[in-house]
Length: 138
Image (tube, rainbow, N blue to C red):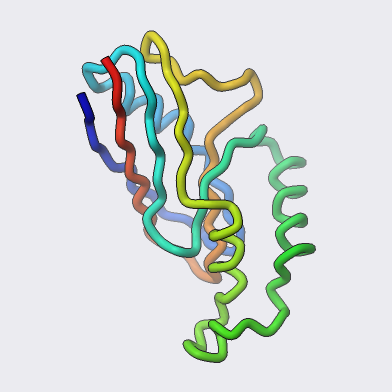
């Protein structure tokens, strides 16, 4: 069985990190699948997904890491072509990736004690985001 659902959320952009773990768990709780996997996918080319310990220190460290390896202030060909000054957002999102696959058993996500599922919005402005979940199992 495959069940597709969506989570809609507003983000602030500029590296906004949003913990979506509980919203994903709520979708698993609401369907008829007891054990399986959930594929989590963010639609759009300037946001990505990962798992981290969602606490201010790690969130700040993560943001600073992206600034070191993919700085906002560099020149990006995308910016020259489109003039929207979010070339760094596209590069950061592609490096992080748009999807995760997380197993669950007895309707509980199999995550570490300090591990949460995080959406990072790298765009340079607030956005409406859609996270698509495909839950598969029995």
